[in-house]
Amino acid sequence: MRRVAGALGAGGGRSGDAIDGRIRLLRLLAVLAFFLVGGRAIALASSAEDLARMAHGQQRCTLTLPAHRGAIVDRDGEDLAVGEPRQTVYATPYMLDDPGAAAEQLCRALQIKKKAARRALKEALSDRSSGFAFVARQATPERAKRALELDFPGVGSYAEETRVYPLGGLAAQVVGFAGLDNTGIAGVEASHEADLAGRPGSAVVVRDPAGRTLKTLRQTQPTPGETVRLTIDADIQYAAERVLERTVRAYGASAAVAIVLDPRTGEVLAMANVPRVKDHRFGVDARYERNRAVTDAYEPGSIFKVVTIAGALADGVVKPGTKFNLASSIKVADRVVGEAHERSTTTYTVREILSHSSNVGAVKIGIKMGQERLLKWVDKFGFGQTTGIGFPGEAAGIVPREWSGSTIGNLPLGQGIAVTPLQMAGAFGVLANDGVWVQPWLTAQVGEEAAPEPERRRVVSDKVARQMLSMLTDAVEKGTGTKARIPGYAVAGKTGTAQKPLADGSGYSKSAYVASFVGVVPADDPQLVVLVAVDEPRAAIWGGEVAAPAVADIAAFALQHLEIEP
Image (cartoon, rainbow, N blue to C red; front, side):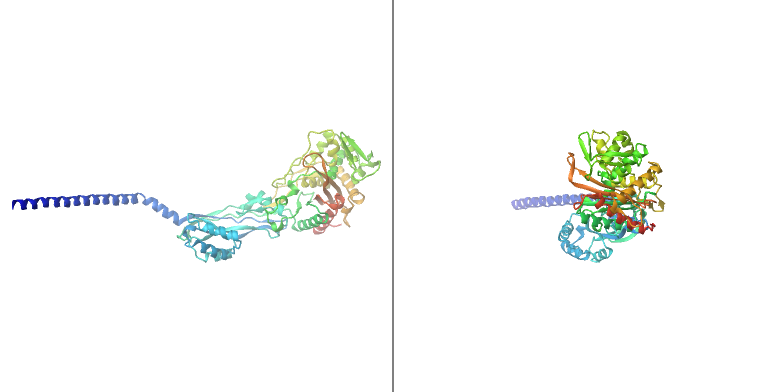
């Protein structure tokens, strides 16, 4: 009995130990669970404020309200550049259940047809880590509406503007263009960016998880940009561009520029560049997208002789009737200067030197003047410095200050100096405006504020200006510019046929020329200066044959359009 009882007592002890172990384990697990739950509760409590901020941020956002970009118009208010409303459609990729299907439907709604664009959109929407992707920039409101009607979560839109040029490529190099974000990149669009852009507004809105706006909390309205009115006359600009296109085709030229300037006011009525920017689409051929009338300098050739001779008259070095005995060529240092057309030794007056465009005569007058006087008149006529027209990238040209022995044989006839077409038109404007240079300008008005008065300065006396116009009238009536005649009007003008310098600086090309002509009409009451410069004509090279007829056509249209009587 004692053995049995002992056995039973020993078994009961082992069972009790097991029960106690289980109880201790349960207690330990309970304590651990308490700490885990308590720690989580503490963590949640400590981050509650952060979570609240996150939720608040998901519901609220600040939107930028774009400002309406101001228009660019011609002198009569004709639209050259205007803003049209557009919608940019965007998506939140991680909210889309089936990105591939969504991309296909959005492409159909927005009429995105290019395979590359469709593929790129599908790839963008398939990026589950992305919180934003453009679906279409500057879509028409109708297409954007169709995209939103698909009711995909996270797909929305915001307002933008796109730049539209109602007259196509007219004056494109002058007007310039605005980029995808509606910021001016070139031309007047860039130079007047601050005026045209306006100031954007803002709105604080509440959105649902799908990105739809529920309500607007506060809003600041944008301030629209100002309208910029130019001095350009769209009709004269159109005529000038068409004449240049015909000229470039007829003579197989690479390019051409034209300027129509009112010498009394400095207003630029036309500034044409050909080849034109077709349909105002920039980014196709950069060679022809700049306004070469302002940005490019070239050696002017014989049209520069007006500066040499006007300066000589003003300094009393010569008179219109002063005679020079002229051989067929003249040697200056190591250079021989000849005439454009062969002739024997002759005697020309200064008037005849200009009307017949004698190279030898211009050099002889230049030698008589000397370096100091020549440079003085180069500076007074405004070469080697910008005109101040305010156009982006305006070139100052190149004036030689350190002369070699042959420079006196180059400069008087327009070689070894580089000028812009606008500078050259301004120089003729001096002669057309009784000897007073008026700063050329393009902007007539910004908003309600008229442009400031242009700078004016006297260059030569009114007597010298009249003498020069009289001689330049002879050049058209019986000299090298006869093809610039306009029935019923007196025309004064000067031809230029300039060899282009070789790229390596070793001399001048024997095949590449710039043919130019500058006309003043009516010569007896000057109201317009018209310049045409044709780059590398092939069928003929002479300014009197290539450029003079173009000046006559442009001037004839402008005279009639402005109702200037014969």
